[in-house]
Length: 213
Image (cartoon, rainbow, N blue to C red; front, side, top):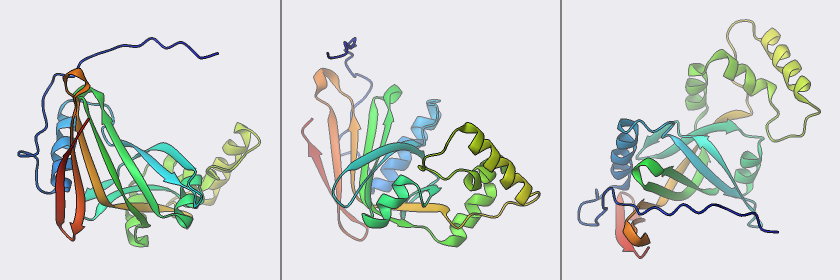
């Protein structure tokens, strides 16, 4: 039996998005919107849905945190042996989704994903709280474990192994999504939303189109 869902219908009326006023560079347009999300007090505006897929096309999706954004791409960190890491090893393509309902906005980004340099991973790992550093050693991410006690035991073992500075595990580090496609979505009345798409046609060159909602 289908689970009943209370449907709340709201018209989006805050603002508009026009092809004549968006930035010619999608990275700058993203930066404008991200800063506006921070200024609006949105909780964790850097949270993004990351979708990956197996070589056979089975997708999976989860929330990760953006840890770097520049003209080179969008960076996040994880365990290379996790499900996402295993999928990226065989199918190095993915997509990101940012959703900020308070601003009636979302951004979709698609591209190729590659590992960042070891130096970048080392530098970011050094900024993490000690507990998070130890957690990277303790958790065999995405693998089945017997119970919570096993995880707690592994954490204690990691703490004993690293009484002072915690080294970065070789199986943990960063990925960077290098985009070839952006879509900026602004909610509008009557579900006639504004959608602006950027497709990369050459290095530093983007074709910009308006899409039907």
